[in-house]
Image 1 (cartoon, rainbow, N blue to C red):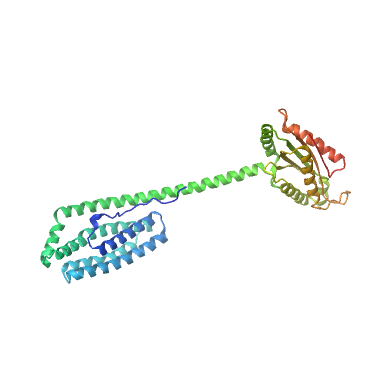
Image 2: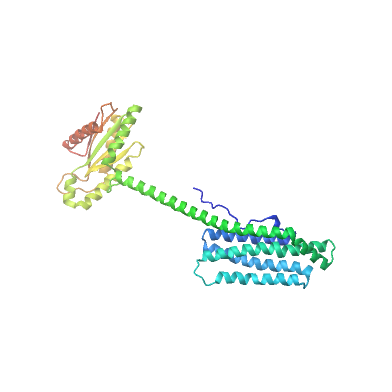
Length: 381
Protein backbone atom coordinates (compact mmCIF):
# COMPACT_ATOMS: atom_id res chain seq x y z
CA UNK A 1 0.00 0.00 0.00
CA UNK A 2 1.38 3.42 -1.02
CA UNK A 3 1.06 5.93 1.82
CA UNK A 4 2.77 8.80 0.01
CA UNK A 5 0.53 11.89 -0.02
CA UNK A 6 -0.53 13.45 -3.31
CA UNK A 7 1.39 16.68 -4.00
CA UNK A 8 -0.74 19.80 -4.29
CA UNK A 9 0.14 23.49 -4.68
CA UNK A 10 -2.28 26.16 -3.56
CA UNK A 11 0.06 28.79 -5.04
CA UNK A 12 1.95 27.53 -8.11
CA UNK A 13 4.79 29.79 -9.23
CA UNK A 14 4.23 31.54 -12.56
CA UNK A 15 6.65 33.51 -14.72
CA UNK A 16 4.27 36.49 -14.50
CA UNK A 17 5.43 36.86 -10.87
CA UNK A 18 9.05 37.43 -11.90
CA UNK A 19 10.29 40.97 -11.25
CA UNK A 20 13.58 40.51 -13.07
CA UNK A 21 15.50 41.14 -9.84
CA UNK A 22 17.07 37.76 -9.03
CA UNK A 23 17.35 38.19 -5.24
CA UNK A 24 13.72 39.28 -4.87
CA UNK A 25 12.43 36.54 -7.20
CA UNK A 26 14.32 33.86 -5.23
CA UNK A 27 12.86 35.11 -1.94
CA UNK A 28 9.37 35.23 -3.43
CA UNK A 29 9.76 31.59 -4.49
CA UNK A 30 10.80 30.61 -0.96
CA UNK A 31 7.79 32.44 0.51
CA UNK A 32 5.48 30.66 -1.92
CA UNK A 33 7.09 27.28 -1.14
CA UNK A 34 6.51 27.88 2.59
CA UNK A 35 2.92 28.88 1.87
CA UNK A 36 2.37 25.62 -0.03
CA UNK A 37 4.01 23.69 2.82
CA UNK A 38 1.66 25.38 5.31
CA UNK A 39 -1.34 24.39 3.21
CA UNK A 40 -0.06 20.81 3.00
CA UNK A 41 0.36 20.55 6.79
CA UNK A 42 -3.16 21.98 7.18
CA UNK A 43 -4.59 19.34 4.83
CA UNK A 44 -2.87 16.62 6.87
CA UNK A 45 -4.21 18.11 10.10
CA UNK A 46 -0.74 18.15 11.65
CA UNK A 47 -0.89 20.88 14.31
CA UNK A 48 2.81 20.59 15.24
CA UNK A 49 3.86 20.95 11.61
CA UNK A 50 1.35 23.78 11.07
CA UNK A 51 2.86 25.81 13.92
CA UNK A 52 6.42 25.10 12.78
CA UNK A 53 5.81 26.14 9.17
CA UNK A 54 3.69 29.13 10.20
CA UNK A 55 6.53 30.42 12.42
CA UNK A 56 9.09 29.86 9.65
CA UNK A 57 6.85 31.63 7.11
CA UNK A 58 6.30 34.75 9.23
CA UNK A 59 9.98 34.98 10.17
CA UNK A 60 11.05 34.64 6.55
CA UNK A 61 8.47 37.23 5.44
CA UNK A 62 10.00 39.72 7.88
CA UNK A 63 13.50 38.96 6.56
CA UNK A 64 12.30 39.34 2.97
CA UNK A 65 10.67 42.73 3.64
CA UNK A 66 13.96 44.07 5.02
CA UNK A 67 15.94 42.82 2.02
CA UNK A 68 13.40 44.11 -0.48
CA UNK A 69 13.15 47.56 1.10
CA UNK A 70 16.94 47.90 1.04
CA UNK A 71 16.82 47.45 -2.74
CA UNK A 72 13.96 49.94 -3.22
CA UNK A 73 15.65 52.55 -0.96
CA UNK A 74 18.72 52.44 -3.16
CA UNK A 75 16.66 53.70 -6.12
CA UNK A 76 13.70 55.52 -4.58
CA UNK A 77 15.14 57.21 -1.50
CA UNK A 78 12.27 58.83 0.45
CA UNK A 79 9.76 58.75 -2.41
CA UNK A 80 6.08 58.21 -1.63
CA UNK A 81 6.14 54.92 -3.52
CA UNK A 82 8.58 53.52 -0.96
CA UNK A 83 6.59 54.90 1.98
CA UNK A 84 3.44 53.23 0.65
CA UNK A 85 5.32 49.98 0.10
CA UNK A 86 6.77 50.03 3.62
CA UNK A 87 3.34 50.74 5.07
CA UNK A 88 1.99 47.70 3.24
CA UNK A 89 4.80 45.58 4.67
CA UNK A 90 4.33 46.88 8.22
CA UNK A 91 0.61 46.01 8.14
CA UNK A 92 1.23 42.45 6.99
CA UNK A 93 2.37 40.69 10.18
CA UNK A 94 -0.18 42.45 12.48
CA UNK A 95 -2.92 41.36 10.09
CA UNK A 96 -1.66 37.75 10.22
CA UNK A 97 -1.51 37.91 14.01
CA UNK A 98 -5.04 39.35 14.12
CA UNK A 99 -6.38 36.50 11.99
CA UNK A 100 -4.56 33.86 14.03
CA UNK A 101 -5.64 35.19 17.42
CA UNK A 102 -9.20 36.16 16.56
CA UNK A 103 -11.85 35.02 19.03
CA UNK A 104 -13.99 32.61 17.05
CA UNK A 105 -15.87 29.34 17.31
CA UNK A 106 -13.93 28.05 14.32
CA UNK A 107 -11.51 25.14 14.62
CA UNK A 108 -7.79 25.94 14.34
CA UNK A 109 -7.75 24.36 10.87
CA UNK A 110 -10.43 26.81 9.69
CA UNK A 111 -8.46 29.76 11.11
CA UNK A 112 -5.27 28.62 9.37
CA UNK A 113 -7.20 28.13 6.14
CA UNK A 114 -8.47 31.74 6.29
CA UNK A 115 -4.85 32.85 6.86
CA UNK A 116 -3.66 30.82 3.87
CA UNK A 117 -6.30 32.37 1.60
CA UNK A 118 -5.34 35.84 2.88
CA UNK A 119 -1.64 35.11 2.28
CA UNK A 120 -2.26 33.90 -1.25
CA UNK A 121 -4.25 36.98 -2.22
CA UNK A 122 -1.95 39.41 -0.40
CA UNK A 123 1.26 37.92 -1.78
CA UNK A 124 -0.02 37.58 -5.35
CA UNK A 125 -1.35 41.12 -5.40
CA UNK A 126 1.74 42.53 -3.66
CA UNK A 127 4.06 40.95 -6.23
CA UNK A 128 1.95 41.70 -9.31
CA UNK A 129 1.04 45.25 -8.34
CA UNK A 130 3.56 46.85 -5.97
CA UNK A 131 6.74 44.87 -6.63
CA UNK A 132 6.20 44.84 -10.40
CA UNK A 133 5.72 48.62 -10.40
CA UNK A 134 9.00 49.08 -8.52
CA UNK A 135 10.79 46.66 -10.86
CA UNK A 136 9.52 48.50 -13.97
CA UNK A 137 10.73 51.76 -12.43
CA UNK A 138 14.24 50.34 -11.82
CA UNK A 139 14.28 48.91 -15.35
CA UNK A 140 13.49 52.38 -16.72
CA UNK A 141 16.24 53.95 -14.59
CA UNK A 142 18.70 51.45 -16.05
CA UNK A 143 17.53 52.52 -19.52
CA UNK A 144 18.67 56.05 -18.69
CA UNK A 145 15.31 57.68 -17.92
CA UNK A 146 15.05 60.50 -15.42
CA UNK A 147 13.46 59.72 -12.02
CA UNK A 148 10.00 61.19 -12.70
CA UNK A 149 9.98 59.93 -16.29
CA UNK A 150 10.81 56.41 -15.06
CA UNK A 151 7.89 56.55 -12.61
CA UNK A 152 5.44 57.74 -15.27
CA UNK A 153 6.57 55.00 -17.68
CA UNK A 154 6.21 52.37 -14.96
CA UNK A 155 2.66 53.57 -14.14
CA UNK A 156 1.77 53.51 -17.80
CA UNK A 157 3.04 49.94 -18.16
CA UNK A 158 1.05 48.89 -15.09
CA UNK A 159 -2.16 50.08 -16.75
CA UNK A 160 -4.05 48.83 -19.79
CA UNK A 161 -3.44 45.19 -20.75
CA UNK A 162 -1.14 44.53 -17.80
CA UNK A 163 -3.83 45.64 -15.36
CA UNK A 164 -6.26 43.26 -17.08
CA UNK A 165 -3.66 40.48 -16.78
CA UNK A 166 -3.25 41.16 -13.05
CA UNK A 167 -7.02 41.08 -12.48
CA UNK A 168 -7.30 37.85 -14.48
CA UNK A 169 -4.47 36.17 -12.59
CA UNK A 170 -5.89 37.28 -9.22
CA UNK A 171 -9.32 35.84 -10.07
CA UNK A 172 -7.71 32.59 -11.20
CA UNK A 173 -5.61 32.27 -8.04
CA UNK A 174 -8.60 33.01 -5.79
CA UNK A 175 -10.53 30.17 -7.42
CA UNK A 176 -7.55 27.84 -7.71
CA UNK A 177 -6.44 28.20 -4.09
CA UNK A 178 -9.92 27.50 -2.67
CA UNK A 179 -10.46 24.48 -4.90
CA UNK A 180 -6.97 23.13 -4.21
CA UNK A 181 -7.44 23.37 -0.43
CA UNK A 182 -10.69 21.43 -0.82
CA UNK A 183 -8.95 18.79 -2.94
CA UNK A 184 -6.10 18.54 -0.41
CA UNK A 185 -8.53 17.98 2.45
CA UNK A 186 -10.49 15.39 0.45
CA UNK A 187 -7.31 13.61 -0.61
CA UNK A 188 -6.02 13.51 2.95
CA UNK A 189 -9.39 12.32 4.27
CA UNK A 190 -9.46 9.57 1.65
CA UNK A 191 -5.91 8.51 2.60
CA UNK A 192 -6.92 8.40 6.27
CA UNK A 193 -9.95 6.25 5.45
CA UNK A 194 -7.82 3.97 3.28
CA UNK A 195 -5.22 3.64 6.06
CA UNK A 196 -7.94 2.91 8.62
CA UNK A 197 -9.46 0.29 6.29
CA UNK A 198 -6.02 -1.21 5.70
CA UNK A 199 -5.39 -1.44 9.46
CA UNK A 200 -8.89 -2.83 10.06
CA UNK A 201 -8.42 -5.46 7.33
CA UNK A 202 -5.02 -6.40 8.77
CA UNK A 203 -6.53 -6.80 12.25
CA UNK A 204 -9.38 -8.82 10.75
CA UNK A 205 -6.93 -11.12 8.97
CA UNK A 206 -4.96 -11.52 12.20
CA UNK A 207 -8.16 -12.25 14.12
CA UNK A 208 -9.21 -14.80 11.49
CA UNK A 209 -5.77 -16.41 11.67
CA UNK A 210 -6.00 -16.60 15.47
CA UNK A 211 -9.54 -17.96 15.22
CA UNK A 212 -8.47 -20.55 12.67
CA UNK A 213 -5.53 -21.50 14.89
CA UNK A 214 -7.83 -21.85 17.90
CA UNK A 215 -10.25 -24.02 15.92
CA UNK A 216 -7.56 -26.58 15.01
CA UNK A 217 -5.45 -26.62 18.18
CA UNK A 218 -5.91 -28.07 21.64
CA UNK A 219 -6.26 -25.26 24.16
CA UNK A 220 -4.21 -26.97 26.88
CA UNK A 221 -1.24 -28.38 24.95
CA UNK A 222 -1.13 -26.29 21.79
CA UNK A 223 -0.94 -29.42 19.64
CA UNK A 224 -3.38 -29.93 16.78
CA UNK A 225 -6.76 -31.27 17.94
CA UNK A 226 -8.77 -34.33 16.89
CA UNK A 227 -10.89 -32.23 14.52
CA UNK A 228 -7.81 -31.20 12.53
CA UNK A 229 -6.52 -34.77 12.48
CA UNK A 230 -9.08 -35.79 9.85
CA UNK A 231 -8.21 -33.01 7.40
CA UNK A 232 -4.44 -33.57 7.77
CA UNK A 233 -4.80 -37.33 7.34
CA UNK A 234 -6.95 -36.87 4.23
CA UNK A 235 -4.33 -34.56 2.70
CA UNK A 236 -1.40 -36.81 3.63
CA UNK A 237 -3.01 -40.03 2.40
CA UNK A 238 -3.69 -38.40 -0.98
CA UNK A 239 -0.06 -37.26 -1.15
CA UNK A 240 1.19 -40.73 -0.13
CA UNK A 241 -0.90 -42.39 -2.88
CA UNK A 242 0.22 -39.90 -5.49
CA UNK A 243 3.94 -40.08 -4.59
CA UNK A 244 3.85 -43.78 -3.65
CA UNK A 245 5.00 -43.16 -0.08
CA UNK A 246 4.43 -45.03 3.16
CA UNK A 247 2.11 -43.33 5.66
CA UNK A 248 2.32 -43.97 9.39
CA UNK A 249 -0.18 -43.26 12.16
CA UNK A 250 0.92 -43.61 15.81
CA UNK A 251 -1.37 -43.54 18.86
CA UNK A 252 0.40 -42.65 22.12
CA UNK A 253 -1.29 -43.24 25.46
CA UNK A 254 0.07 -42.22 28.90
CA UNK A 255 0.24 -45.25 31.16
CA UNK A 256 -1.86 -45.22 34.36
CA UNK A 257 -2.92 -41.61 33.76
CA UNK A 258 -6.19 -42.04 35.69
CA UNK A 259 -4.20 -42.89 38.80
CA UNK A 260 -2.10 -39.72 38.33
CA UNK A 261 -5.22 -37.57 38.30
CA UNK A 262 -6.71 -39.43 41.26
CA UNK A 263 -3.55 -39.15 43.36
CA UNK A 264 -2.14 -35.71 42.40
CA UNK A 265 -5.23 -33.94 41.08
CA UNK A 266 -6.13 -32.52 37.68
CA UNK A 267 -3.77 -29.54 37.91
CA UNK A 268 -0.76 -31.84 38.11
CA UNK A 269 -2.34 -34.04 35.44
CA UNK A 270 -2.60 -31.04 33.09
CA UNK A 271 1.03 -30.12 33.76
CA UNK A 272 2.11 -33.64 32.79
CA UNK A 273 0.00 -33.52 29.61
CA UNK A 274 1.80 -30.32 28.61
CA UNK A 275 5.22 -31.91 29.26
CA UNK A 276 4.38 -34.94 27.13
CA UNK A 277 3.05 -32.64 24.40
CA UNK A 278 6.31 -30.69 24.38
CA UNK A 279 8.24 -33.93 24.04
CA UNK A 280 6.14 -34.92 21.04
CA UNK A 281 6.61 -31.49 19.47
CA UNK A 282 10.40 -31.66 19.87
CA UNK A 283 10.55 -35.08 18.22
CA UNK A 284 8.21 -34.24 15.33
CA UNK A 285 10.59 -31.94 13.49
CA UNK A 286 10.18 -32.98 9.84
CA UNK A 287 7.73 -31.04 7.62
CA UNK A 288 5.72 -34.29 7.22
CA UNK A 289 5.41 -34.88 11.01
CA UNK A 290 2.16 -33.84 12.68
CA UNK A 291 1.35 -34.24 16.40
CA UNK A 292 -2.21 -34.20 17.81
CA UNK A 293 -3.95 -34.53 21.15
CA UNK A 294 -6.93 -36.80 20.63
CA UNK A 295 -8.36 -36.10 24.08
CA UNK A 296 -7.60 -37.01 27.69
CA UNK A 297 -4.20 -38.74 27.87
CA UNK A 298 -4.24 -39.93 24.25
CA UNK A 299 -2.09 -38.46 21.48
CA UNK A 300 -1.53 -39.18 17.80
CA UNK A 301 1.29 -38.63 15.30
CA UNK A 302 1.04 -38.79 11.51
CA UNK A 303 4.22 -39.06 9.47
CA UNK A 304 5.08 -40.10 5.93
CA UNK A 305 8.03 -41.48 3.93
CA UNK A 306 8.87 -43.99 6.68
CA UNK A 307 8.95 -47.73 6.26
CA UNK A 308 7.82 -50.07 9.04
CA UNK A 309 11.30 -50.32 10.58
CA UNK A 310 11.71 -46.54 10.56
CA UNK A 311 8.34 -46.16 12.29
CA UNK A 312 9.40 -48.65 14.97
CA UNK A 313 12.56 -46.60 15.58
CA UNK A 314 10.58 -43.35 15.60
CA UNK A 315 8.08 -44.73 18.13
CA UNK A 316 10.94 -45.94 20.34
CA UNK A 317 12.51 -42.45 20.26
CA UNK A 318 9.22 -40.94 21.47
CA UNK A 319 8.75 -43.61 24.17
CA UNK A 320 12.30 -43.17 25.49
CA UNK A 321 12.03 -39.36 25.41
CA UNK A 322 8.92 -39.44 27.63
CA UNK A 323 10.56 -41.90 30.03
CA UNK A 324 13.67 -39.68 30.21
CA UNK A 325 11.51 -36.87 31.61
CA UNK A 326 11.62 -38.90 34.87
CA UNK A 327 8.25 -37.62 36.03
CA UNK A 328 7.59 -39.40 39.39
CA UNK A 329 4.74 -41.89 39.34
CA UNK A 330 2.13 -42.71 41.98
CA UNK A 331 3.10 -44.79 45.00
CA UNK A 332 0.55 -47.51 44.24
CA UNK A 333 2.20 -48.69 40.98
CA UNK A 334 5.36 -50.63 40.22
CA UNK A 335 6.48 -48.03 37.61
CA UNK A 336 9.33 -45.75 38.70
CA UNK A 337 8.34 -42.83 36.44
CA UNK A 338 5.84 -41.76 33.83
CA UNK A 339 5.76 -43.86 30.64
CA UNK A 340 3.73 -44.20 27.46
CA UNK A 341 2.54 -47.07 25.30
CA UNK A 342 2.40 -46.73 21.52
CA UNK A 343 0.52 -48.55 18.78
CA UNK A 344 1.07 -47.74 15.12
CA UNK A 345 0.14 -48.63 11.57
CA UNK A 346 2.58 -48.10 8.69
CA UNK A 347 2.03 -48.95 5.04
CA UNK A 348 1.67 -47.59 1.56
CA UNK A 349 -2.05 -46.70 1.52
CA UNK A 350 -4.37 -48.49 -0.84
CA UNK A 351 -7.49 -47.03 -2.45
CA UNK A 352 -9.75 -48.43 0.29
CA UNK A 353 -7.64 -47.16 3.19
CA UNK A 354 -9.14 -44.45 5.41
CA UNK A 355 -8.35 -42.85 8.72
CA UNK A 356 -10.65 -45.41 10.36
CA UNK A 357 -8.73 -48.34 8.90
CA UNK A 358 -5.40 -46.88 10.09
CA UNK A 359 -6.83 -46.00 13.53
CA UNK A 360 -8.27 -49.51 13.93
CA UNK A 361 -4.88 -51.18 13.40
CA UNK A 362 -3.02 -48.63 15.56
CA UNK A 363 -5.61 -49.11 18.35
CA UNK A 364 -5.21 -52.90 18.29
CA UNK A 365 -1.42 -52.52 18.52
CA UNK A 366 -1.79 -50.01 21.39
CA UNK A 367 -4.06 -52.47 23.24
CA UNK A 368 -1.46 -55.19 22.75
CA UNK A 369 1.33 -52.92 24.06
CA UNK A 370 -0.76 -52.24 27.17
CA UNK A 371 -1.50 -55.96 27.62
CA UNK A 372 2.19 -56.77 27.28
CA UNK A 373 3.05 -54.62 30.31
CA UNK A 374 2.99 -51.01 28.99
CA UNK A 375 5.99 -48.68 28.30
CA UNK A 376 6.53 -50.18 24.85
CA UNK A 377 5.48 -49.79 21.21
CA UNK A 378 4.05 -52.20 18.70
CA UNK A 379 3.85 -51.48 14.96
CA UNK A 380 2.38 -53.36 12.02
CA UNK A 381 1.30 -52.69 8.42
